Image 1 (cartoon, one colour):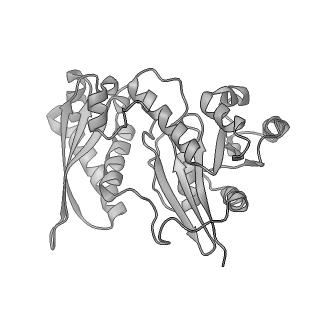
Image 2 (cartoon, one colour):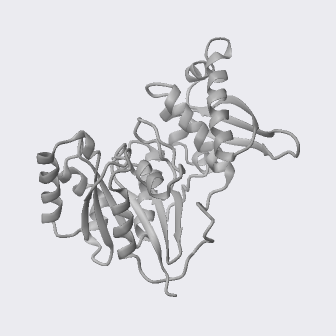
Length: 301
């Protein structure tokens, strides 16, 4: 039996719904989702395996003009994902994106100029728009004559997401499966626990706090007949941010720990003891050495 397999990069501006779409297509929550932009910081790989095909999705950070070193690294993740991909899904938010702005961004231009790359345009959040607006955007994208298909969806409501999967299957090249059928991602449990804690920071805190934080797992101990022990550090940029995370008499971090622990237990399917601490690393988002220690590639290639 011939199989088809390939890498599919999902790209678009912040908050367009890339992570929601990937989770919907996988039927599993792998990428963290919040209502704030720039939630996804690292390339998250999700694997959809069926008898005759395997799709490896690459969820990427949102496309923006970098203002500091971390954002430059995120932009590089997007470019790397495009170079690795057999198919690229360009997502448009019908409620806020101007098609011309999206198409003029550097990452999308790389996609459009590559004639050997299969491309899908996916128009998201159509449940918040009207037929006239939708038809206008569909026509604009179709007239470009660069996309294999233009697909309107609502990722949040899982409306027409199966059409995206069907189109991807049609475009997949023939080839062997890269991963075992029961594998959902190439990342380990520590990575997903880190992402869950970071998601809860994004949900609980306002303004600049979420964007100034990073989460590191210092200890992850699986224990027989006892709860797993997880010790995590929330890194902030300024001393003034530390008491905001901790809260009066430690109430904020205690609440954060509770909601994060419950989400981790649901994801892992077992009980855990979660310990959270806060550390300050001044201007870490612009420090190449600190970024490297946090797992961001800062080498100039």
